[in-house]
Image (cartoon, rainbow, N blue to C red; front, top):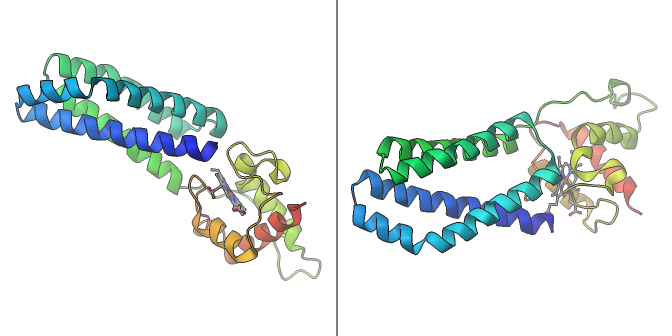
Length: 210
Ligand code: HEC
């Protein structure tokens, strides 16, 4: 469900951007007739796309929760709408271009949001692999709490948007690969976690399996 809505959102955002890009180019190039024609043809599709874009966005928001960057992104998108409406109504090129730049900036922020994962503090007392009492599952649990719980939920089963980790069928190598490189809306952790942490969190995830 989450995955389907996530992709709907992605497709809607891209179509929306494409339509706006074409409209802005036509306006800037003084192709008034072509613009009027394009706007007319796209009236209904545009309405459907923006509705899908908005509804899927709201759903994702309820699942992922808000971050400062996400709020900035939403504010920029909201502000770009009246700018675009006025820009196209008054055939004001500067405003039309400004609204496009705003939407693209918000899009860029979304990508940044995905790539950048803040370093979290992991309980150092369980992280020493040289320790005679080192327990990978315990170490993994503290990594999990810091980085993964927000999506997969406490104990792996109560996730908002993450896959239920207590019923996964994937093998060790696939899990490692997913955690390192990410999958759909899950970011990759290879730049944030070291090998030991990735091994530990995988061991913890495997311990959750019922
Ligand atoms: C932003 C939300 C998010 C975060 C943070 C996150 N995950 Fe995920 N995770 C997902 C989603 C969504 C999927 C399902 C991806 C897919 O479509 O295959 C997933 C899939 C997985 C899978 C694959 C499950 C399977 O068997 O196919 C594993 C393992 C996993 N996550 C572990 C982790 C670990 C460990 C962390 C922390 C280091 C983490 N995840 C952080 C959202 C997240």
